[in-house]
View 1 (tube, rainbow, N blue to C red):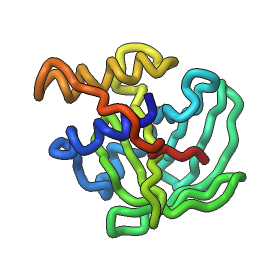
View 2: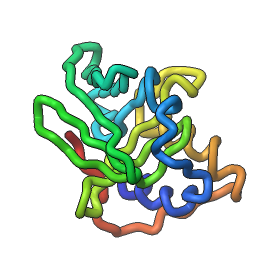
View 3: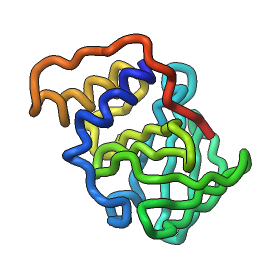
Length: 151
């Protein structure tokens, strides 16, 4: 499923906006889809550059900083990450770990009419928001390498 979502990014790229519109990023509940089947991890980018990371309601604090040039720095207890723009709009963020082909995917739960708790919820949301506009079915192209990373 993670590879399938990585494959969606080029198909919806025409909907992407620049990462520098921070009003779409801040004070939203961004659900990481990396482990959504086992853990619900929510990222909240606050205006004061504080980052709140909730794992099933248990919160860790970190920081984030927009660096310009479609990139930003994220500091967590697990490390510091330089992330580049992959895809961004008010509904989804795909961030690429610099100098790799690995992505982190986030869906804006604030824009969804209910909680995003499963990979099926996420796929349904993405198909409804983007791919149903383009066409009614999307093929999974099969055996590609996993392009997702976690923090």
